[in-house]
Image 1 (cartoon, rainbow, N blue to C red):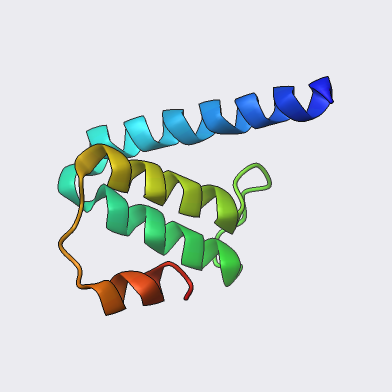
Image 2 (cartoon, one colour):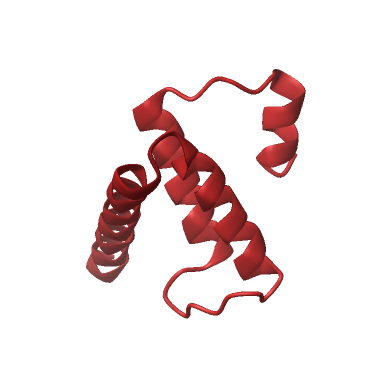
Length: 83
């Protein structure tokens, strides 16, 4: 039980750190960069053993939460989120 909790806290810390770094580096484009990294990781264009496509999706959602990104219509958001 405690191992699961520790891993979850570590995952959240990595997501938080990556979201912070991406917002600082890419500004308003950070959401799109995270989305592209998730896709590239899924297509094996980049290999990062510590960051899965799911990790980048979590980063993308964290960026969306922090920046309040709402510029896409509902259908586009649905498709981007894997709907």
